[in-house]
Amino acid sequence: MLLLVTILLGCWDVGLVKVHDVDDIKLSPDTYVTKKNAVDFMTINKIDGKKIEAVCKIIDEVSFAGTDSVVPDTIEGKCVQDADRLDAIGAIGIARTLAYGGSRGRKIYDPEIKPKMGMNKEEYRNNQDSTSINHFYEKLLLLKDMMNTTEGKKLAEHRLVVMQEFLNEFMLEWEGKM
Image 1: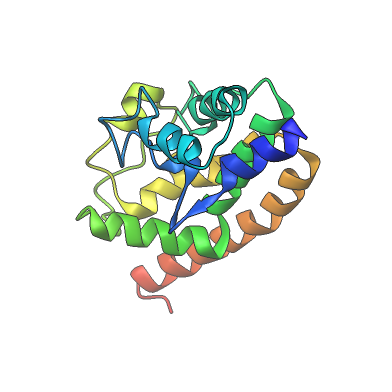
Image 2: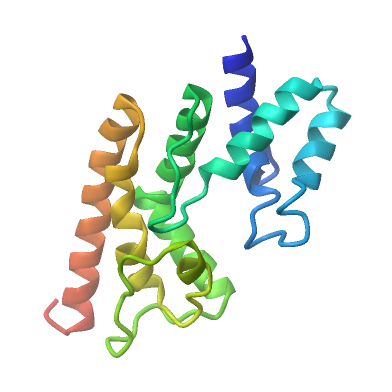
């Protein structure tokens, strides 16, 4: 039962943000370390301390951190990490990438700005001068091979193809070939 409750809490929608995202360093840098928003939400909803602790551990493990990304040590963490990564790829991932980039004033594409590959956690978080298209190469196309579960790997296969087709079409149009 702890497994199911923990996975559900780790993926539980709160408006448009999931519990594991409410204290994301990009969105809430002031609460990232303490997980205050997630802890407050779970406390208000009468989640016991042991489950809160388990969810907070998953929150620490779930995010992509470049070459410093960790594989969670629990099946709950692996499932939440796969779910988070699946949200980032495929058709919805394309839309999210472009929307987030636009909200941050990021260029969609600039052929003069090359993707930075093999970044560690600090380099990835400080990579402010990239483009939305580069983000596919710097992170999103790598996620398929970082899935933890059989089902996550299976779902990621198709979503990878969707992103590759989008990028191929984007480049054809950008170069005036379509």
